[in-house]
Image (cartoon, rainbow, N blue to C red; front, side, top):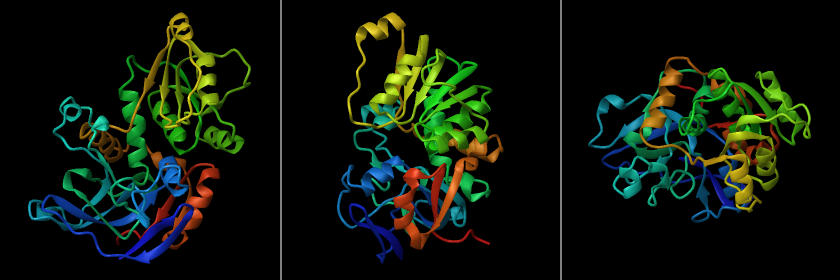
Length: 328
């Protein structure tokens, strides 16, 4: 089969590789499409070192089941599925507590387990979620939408009437969609004015002035950079909640006095927990309660994977790569 191989940081080539073997509890998926996100770019640029080179990236995938393991029902053959790429052990303390996102043995497709940017990928059958066929752009957003929905599920209080989303790349845009579905009036800020303008076409309100006095009971930062966190703290209302989604490693300044006097809640949210969060997202898609594909702006052919990685950081919205045509 063909796979987009990261042969070294910053360079992807399409090469022939062996088909992945199917374990007893696994399914093999004929991949149709894969979305790109910030984690993928970190591996691509070498900021997050790949386990080895060459390496297959990609985790925001969907496709059809073409083979099943001996302990998987044959009736699953041909199903359209979205991939839940984080595979938890299911037996550690965190998994037993329901926090599979914190499983110390967690394997992540495309990060420390071979990725989905290939014609075929193998995952445990429980991580292949059957969905009703619908627009490819919706399905390619299923995984990042689950990240957003899990973050909102983890909030200590119901969502307020208005919120601020800082950083409106693909993840931030999906957060806008998810909040608006809940009736929230969403304001946005990003240093990339094109992205703010695109978010406005989806109904978000650009933050009027960087130095205005507007404050919010809920602020979501999708970038994690110190400047964004400083803005979040500045714009948080007394008793407000700041949700951090970015995996930036640089430290930021925040004193205990600020947290106490402003009575802030700072909440980090990592991926999602198996199986409830993905099950909920699939239900939203199947019931047509959300259309996450509206955040997609750029599509690339499989052969253009290298170019897709090089250009997605500046795209107005979400970028995805089509591996093969939709099934007839």
